Every structure is written in structure tokens, then in C-alpha cells.
Length: 361
Image 1: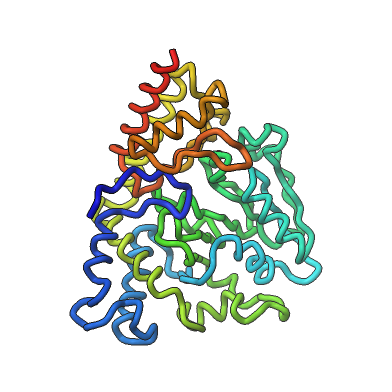
Image 2: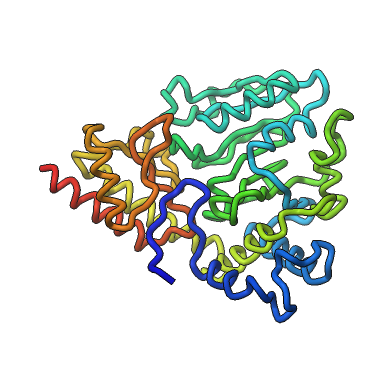
């Protein structure tokens, strides 16, 4: 195998090398069965064991209460933007949404196709550089649920706290922050996450939903988008994304081997601290986000002169530091430092940033 480089891609993102090597070793012959996990029936005893083990390991990692169902579904988080109101917002109903950036805005736009969306708070007043304090939120009594995006992958804005929404179900798009640290699942009605950041490959989405929320989908909701149907059929109403599910299970095992989410919290905290410190003590780099609201997983930064962007990226790639170009909507740079991105990778980036700044005088 050629040397693996340091991958800072926002998604599909870096996967643990140990997991990739295990999947490689099992690709042609899974556990001596003479076939790949991609080739076996999803209803076979062998794959059922893969699915059940993956779910139990995720439950263990997040301490998921028994009255929550865990679903492994096709698609990604963007499909949930429509699936959520179809399941939880009745005809003529409404929901509260919190606007903190591009992904929450997409969720708002899609939900508006199915009912009234009350934007209860928006970071727009802060140029999307700070989370609006909950005292400024205008939650509505008529809302069926409250939706927010704990971490905005593109803008690098993250909640450091869980909103208090009374008896309304709290729904969170945790695509880019799930499994990065411990989480009290019981505070949520539903959590969903596209897999391609901290869970596994793209094409899979994990949904954790409280059982009492199921069974209220609109009559117009397609069968394939009804969470109750998915739960009743063990996420196998149709053929699920078996290889993605299998890889997710390997990553859950890997997380346990690292010491679980408490250990990942320590590791991730150290990584983000190293990178933000390098930015904050520099005269060349800057990050606009309110320090209390900075993302642990996605760190955007700009150079003082945009004309230096291309030489910075060229030098980074020459040193094996990949996918640092910022999202096209905001420009600059972005380093995504999910669970599979090591401290070694962050240290290499920090060293290069210092070298480049020195070169620029």
C-alpha cells in the first residue's frame, strides 16, 4: 500500500486506517464464508449478525435509551429535510427551526414545502459568526417539533449546549458532530446523521428516534419515507445499504477500542485546540467565529491576502495535506478534523501553516 496522506475533507471524509485494512482483508471472504459482505443476502443470518452488532455497539457508545429506535437508512441527511416534516408535521401544521447557516437554511427551505416554518432564531444578525442565545429565541406554541443543526459544516459554527424546548420534541442534524464526544440522547426526540463524516461511507444515514414519535406520518408520506415502517422492518423494508452498514459497524468497534466517546472527546478537544491556537496566534490566518461557538469538527480560516490561497493549497498538497480548500460559498480554507483525523495530521498542518507564514514574511 502506498503511503496514506492526511485528508481534511469535509465529506466524504477520512476513515480510520485500521478499519479500511480490516474491510480490505474481508472484502473477498467475510469470516470464512467464501463471499464478500457485499454479496450476501441482507436477510441472511450472517448479515443479520452484522446489523445487530452494529446497532448494539452504537447503542453502547451513545448510551441510547431502550425507548429509542435506531435506523440504518439509505440516502443522506438532505433527504431527512423532507422526511422529518412528512412524519412529524401534520397537514396544515407548523414547526420551529433555528437558522445557523447553510445546512439549517436548506432544512428550513425543504420543510416549508410541507407546512409553516417558524424561524424561531437566526444567526443572520451575527453574520452567522455566533449562535443566538436562547433568551432571544421565539419558539411557538403550535410547533410540532423544534429542529436545529448543532454543527454547521461549512461555516464552522457549533452549539456548545443543547437547547431547552420544553415538551416539544427536539430534532437535531448531527451529521458532522455525532460520535465526537458523549451525548445525552434522552434530551432529543430524534437525531439524524449522514454517515460520511464520523460514521462511515456516504449513502447511509443513521436515525435515532424516540418510539412515541413513530406512527404519525401523513397519509401522503411515501412508504419508504415512513420511519414507523422502517422501524417495524428493522431498517430492511427494502434492501438496505449493506456495505455502508457493515463499515459503520467496524467504525463503532474501532471507537470502542479507542476508549469510547470519553476518549474521543479528549482527543478531539486537543486537536481543535492545537489548530485554533495556531490561527489565533498568527498574523496571517484568521477565523471569524465567536470563540465560544467554534466548531470542533470543521475549522474554517482565511489568509490575510486571498492571493496567497493558491500557493498555500499547492504547498499543502506537496506536503500531503489534502482537501483544505474552503467551501465555494465562503472561500478561504477549511480543515475538517473528524474522529479519523489524527493529532499527527493536525500537527503536520500547524507546522506547515507556520512555515508558510514565515515564508511570506
